[in-house]
Image (cartoon, rainbow, N blue to C red):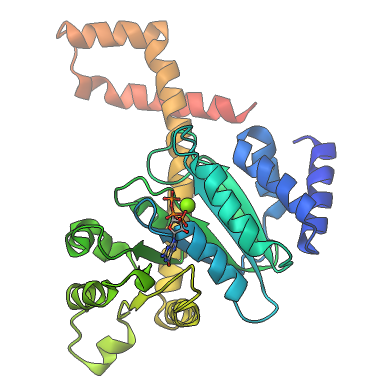
Amino acid sequence: VNSSQLDKLEGLAGKALTGDTGATARLLTVALSGGESADCLSEVLQGRERTAHIVGVTGPPGAGKSTLVGALAHAWPGEGRTAILAIDPTSPITGGAILGDRVRMKQLSGDSRVYVRSVASHGRTDGLALGIERATDVLSTLNFDTVLIETVGVGQVEVEITSLADTTVAVFTPGQGDVVQAVKSGLNEVTDIFVVNKADLGGADSVIRDLRRVTRAAVESAAEAETTWQRPVLGTSATDKEGLSALIEQIGAHREFLERSGEGVDRRTRRGQLQIGEMLNARWHFALTELMTSSQGREMSNRVAMGEVTAHGVTPSLMSELLALIDRQDQY
Ligand SMILES: Nc1nc2c(ncn2[C@@H]2O[C@H](COP(=O)(O)OP(=O)(O)OP(=O)(O)O)[C@@H](O)[C@H]2O)c(=O)[nH]1
Ligand SMILES: [Mg+2]
C-alpha cells in the first residue's frame, strides 16, 4: 500500500475527528468512490472504536423523510454530533437530490452539531448507494453519536437498509393507501419503529391504531418481554416539529434494548458477515471467470457438454485450480 496515501488519509482522519467538516467530506468522497484508496482508508480506520448508533430511515416517496431527518437532527438533545447520510435519487425529473438538499440546508444552517452529506443512488435499486456501507463505517469512527441514513423512496420496501442500520425507522403518511398491507408484505419484520408523519393533515389516528394492531408482538412471559422489542407506532409532524422528542426517545430506548438483549451484537455480526461475504464473492467470481475463459476451462466445458465427462466429476480438479488462481491473485 502507498505510504504517502496512508499518511494523507491519517491526517484527514485526525482532522475529521476534531469536527473538521472539510476533512470529513473528503474522507466520505474516498469511501464512496471505492477502489484502492477506499481500501486504504479502511486500513487507516482499522482498530478504531465504532461508537455511533446507526439509524436507517425508510419509507415511500414524499413521506417526509428528508424533512423528518433534518428536524430530528436539529432537535436532538445534548452536545453529541449527528451525521446525516441522505441517499437521494439521481432522477433528472424529480430532482430529488436537489429538493431534499434544499429542505435540509434551510433547517440546519448554523447547527454545528449536525453534518449532512447527500449521496446519489447511481442506479442502485435497493434504496442504498454504492459505497454507502463504507461511508457509514467511516462516520461511525469519527466521533458522531448518531448517524441517520435516509434511503431513496423508491416506492417499495427498502429491506436492505436493515443490514446497515442498528435501528430501522419506517415513515408513512395517512392517506397514501393501505399502509397496513404495505407493512404486512415485508416491512413488519425489519422495522423497529413505525412513524406516521404529516399527522397535522389529519387521518393519522386511525392509521396509527391499525398499525399498532398488526405490529404488536405476542409475548408469553416476563422473560420473553425482556428480550422482545415492542415496535412503537408514533405520529409526527416534521414540518410543525411535533412528536420529535417522543421519536428520539424511542430511538434511544431501542439502542438500550439492543445492548441489553444482545441483539445489537447479533446485528453487528450480520453486518460483518455481509462485508466478508461480499469480499469473498468478488474474489471468487473473478477467479471463476478467469478459469472458465482460459483454454483449459473452455476445453473442459466442451467435454462436459459433449458428455465425455460429468460436471460433478471434474469439480474436484477445477476447485483446486480455482484456489490456485485465488492464491496467485494474493501475490499481487
Ligand atoms: N403537512 C406536512 N407536510 C410535510 C410534513 N413532512 C414533510 N412534508 C412535506 O412533504 C413534502 C415531501 O417531503 P420530503 O421531506 O422531501 O419527503 P421525502 O420522503 O424525503 O421524499 P423523497 O426523498 O423524494 O422520497 C415536502 O413538501 C414537505 O414539506 C409534515 O409533517 N406535514
Ligand atoms: Mg428525501
